[in-house]
Amino acid sequence: MLKIKVKKGHNINIAGAASGEILAPQKNTTVSLSPENFRYIKPKLLVKENDSVKLGDPIFFDKLNPEIKWPAIASGTISKIIYGERRAVKEIIFNVDPQIENDNSSGKDKKLSNKDDVVNYLLEKNMWPFITQRPFNKVANPSDNPKSIIVSLANTAPLSVDYNFTLASNKDSIISALINLKKLTEGKLFVAVRPGEFNYLSDLDFIDIVEVEGPHPAGNVGVILNHISPISSKDIVWTVQGHHLPILGKLFSDGIFDPTMIINLSGPIVKNPSYFKSRIGASLESHCKGNLSTDKARIISGDVLTGKESMMNGYLGFYHSSISVIEESFDRSFIGWLHPGGSSKYSVFNAYLGGNKSPYSFTTLQNGSHRAFVPIEAWEKVFPMDIYINALARSIEANDFEEMEQLGIYECDEEDVALCSFVCPSKTDVGAIIRKGLDTVYFDK
Image 1 (cartoon, helix red, strand yellow):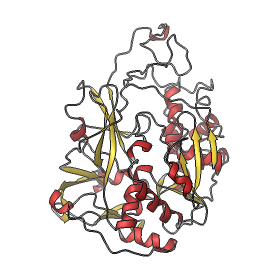
Image 2 (cartoon, one colour):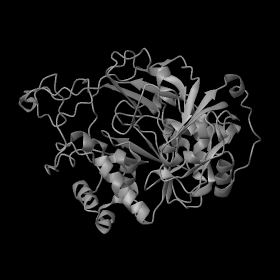
Image 3 (cartoon, one colour):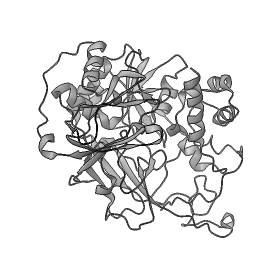
Image 4 (cartoon, helix red, strand yellow):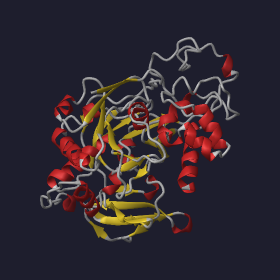
């Protein structure tokens, strides 16, 4: 067993964490699949409005890699297709028909003995988009040979789901998924866990367990890879979201696509922060309506650091397993920089009286405006990777391709630097800078 103890980072003590119980399933009459959740693809539709579909049917494919198709995430009809500029497909909305969906019969058992068998099976079932890659955090290319595969079950992001709780009843499906994922690589299959969790995985001799301790972002795939197996420009590492393991496991063992999963709704203005049995692409309204203490709310699909802002009538992102809600606020206090602190201020570095020991009701207020970089090592105090993050950001802004590569752009992703944005005195969106650098490198190739 490998062990990682991360010292740099910070667990944001935000109020409104979900309680340790799973409430009754929320009824989703509509769900959504958005091509915008997937980077660097050019979708081509295989359906039109009012078409009838069943779970797993192909909905669209990538014109740059036509063998990769995306599955219908519900049985029913295509109620609406939303287009953007130049007729780009933005969102596909499904009307869910429970009667058809309940008739999700299992397929024939297949003997999957090697990589080609598993790849072809996932492509045949239109389930390949569940496999992503580093660098670039995009849907993997089936023809690549990954250096290794990594799955993180150590979710450390603020207000994110606790995998040890939500996946407690999915032991068999998780093992089934891991058995077949291992066939996709000649390298190692790393599974990251927190101490004392998922103990049954230690009985599986084909995986390498990585025990992770420390504050966020200790559980991020990028941080774990940086500690155990850094990647270069020539390396490809595949990964799967922890909450997708049961979905893949049921596909491999029973031949069915079951889009259900347990998500959480949390945040300072949520009346009853809880876990719910839900599904991929769930309606945010079905979970949030009537459960918020104010109308001035920012609803986020995903966690508060890396999620995507949405509206009440929006939907859960394909790779997201949580809904976070904080209050919209634009009221800056007069000469707030002179405030002595106390319970009304939150400080990562204990710059105020009171500090960060008690849960804090964060809002969208930034307490300042964007300005030039201030090199006081605020980023470095919460960034646990062996990378000069300030120098990397500057090389990206200078569009210095060679220096980006030398400084480790391939190892980074937005989620790995999200805390840098949170603590930045210059109010710089460090994640946007990293994505700009990754886009530059990707398209230059």
